[in-house]
Length: 250
Image (cartoon, rainbow, N blue to C red; front, side):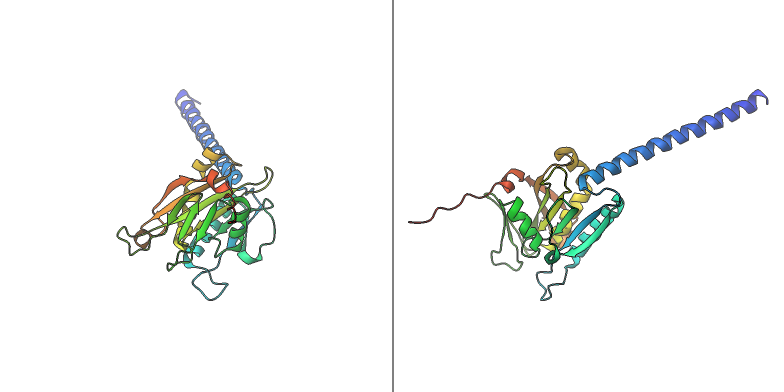
């Protein structure tokens, strides 16, 4: 073998080794990234998670689900598949177990989801949803002393809706529960999109086992749907604070 042929062979071998090392480095980065996602959502490969479905508040049927809530569930199902876990889709009135056994995604506010109502009462007592007499069942979201009012699409701004996005992790060894509690089905969908798009940033800020509660605002949902959503406030401390009991009148 002359020198020119040997140089070609050595060049091919070096290229193959370099390509192999590059592929291996990329594969390791993807694996580490996926492991961080699994840890944040509490979904190891082969594990199970609950997708707790709410009811359509405007429907007479207790089994009806809003189209935008279905879209939100589909995006969560894709996330579950990415993690290599199995999704168990259950109605909100059919869940009879505590937190920590499985990862959980709970969709809808307390008037459409009994499971959400239980989670808020037990873990985030500073959060309240109040019907103030508008066309939607949950028009006012309050956390502590701050109120976030729903505005219909007829408003000059095009309207706005708010959602509470929270991560509960009551035991260090348990799986987390995520609450997606919007004033409307569109705001539920927007909050799920925010969670899926920003989970790495949330993991860096709150850690793999941290608890948080965030208020999100959906801008002009009539025109933009669930696509334009922004973080309004971190209300973790206020949400955990139980309101002071009112003293009786003598």
